[in-house]
Every structure is written in C-alpha cells, then in structure tokens.
Image 1: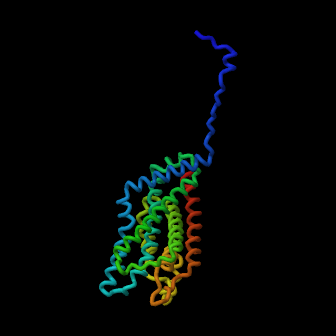
Image 2: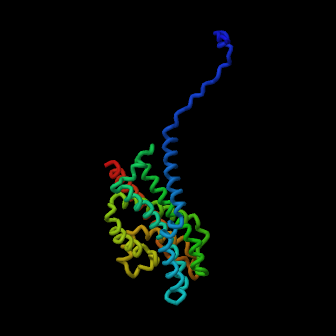
Length: 288
C-alpha cells in the first residue's frame, strides 16, 4: 500500500477550486418574470382556437354586416367599410386587452385565492401585476393584428388601408393595448366575481357605442353634447388615432379626425390613471 507523504502532496499539481457565484437579485427576478410570462403564452397557444373565437367573433360579425352587407344593399356609402375598419380594430384591441386581465384576475382573487402561486415566485408584488398587464397587452395586439388579413378577406375591394403610416398605426395600437390592460387590471381588482356580469353589461355597451367605432368624431359636430361625451371614452382616441393613420384621402381630401396630439394625450392619460389605480388596488387586494 503506497504511503502518501508530505513531499508527494507538495508535488501534486494544484487544482483550481471553482466557487459558484450566487445568482444576482436582478437575474433571479427576471428569470421568474419571464417564466410566468412564458407559461401564460404557452397556455394561450394551446387554446388558440378558443382564444380566436372569443376575441374575434363579435368583431368579425360587425365587420361583415356593417362593412360588407350594408354597403352591398345600398344602406351605406361604398367607402363606409374603410371608415368602419379602424374603429373595429381599436375595439378588438381594447376589449381583448381588458378581458385578458380582468376576467382571470377576478378568479385569481376569488375565494380560492389562486393568485398565491404567482405570489410565491421570487418577484415583487408589483411585477406580478406588470406581467399580467404585459401579457394582456400582447393578447390585445395579437387579436388586433389578426383583424387586418381577416378584414381584407371580408371586405374585398372595400378594404382600403394606407401603407405610409405603419409607425402611427403600430404606436396607437400599442398605446391602446397597454391603456386597456391597465383598465382591465383596475376592473379585476375592484370588482368581485358576483358583480362581473352586471359590470360588463353596464360598461361595455356604452363603451362600444360612445367610442366613435361606427362614425368619425368630427361627424358629431351637429350633436355637440354627444361629441363632448365621447371624449370621456378612451375608445374614441384609439378609433380616431387609427382612423387618422389608416383611411386614405376621400375625393382627394384627407379625412377630418381628432388631432393626433389629442389622441396621444387621451390614451396616455388613460394609461397613467388606470395603471396607477390598478397597481395600488392590486397591492391592496393581495396584501390585505
């Protein structure tokens, strides 16, 4: 049996000892945030058919009746589809973003308090709400983007969208999606599940019909009081912003719409108000 002497130990080559550094706080939080977001995306991908039916069915029927059938039977002008499409896309983005965060959040904060599995992740409470807003905005943008090829198929020759204002179209849609997600977060944290059906009935019908979905804002100049009422609806700014960027000139003249400055201001104010309210309400519900 060989003996290990002090001399042999001294002659043995030294092996570097690798000490594994602990993960930084930022890396740990970022990894957890992306894991939760990835899980939500995967779940939606597995339910993509149901998601598309839920988010697009109403908008597609509106577009088919008002943009294709009514002009075909002479009830509206042939170019009405071009005026109507921006409003429908704005409506799709807004409703999809609101529903994507409001409905699941009401269930998560219900009796079973299913939100606890997310709160156990190494994330600040506020980032749990931010992930829900980001995911809801992504769903809204995806639903709005899908509307373009479907509208081309439904409207046919009546499909008229400018291609020189893609940046404005994208910017308005992104701002609309995040503002709507903030609104959904506020609804989901302030309303209990037993009142959700009543709230949707009371809020969404006025939201749709006072949001300049079916008509340009400037066309309401003869009904001044109603024109002012529509300015309190965030959908008005979304629809008018897309209408400004999407509708081509009519008879050589650009369509008169709400100023883009007011569009950006209206959506930004909506985002700040409901994002702040929703975040504060979320913290109060989950920590209370």
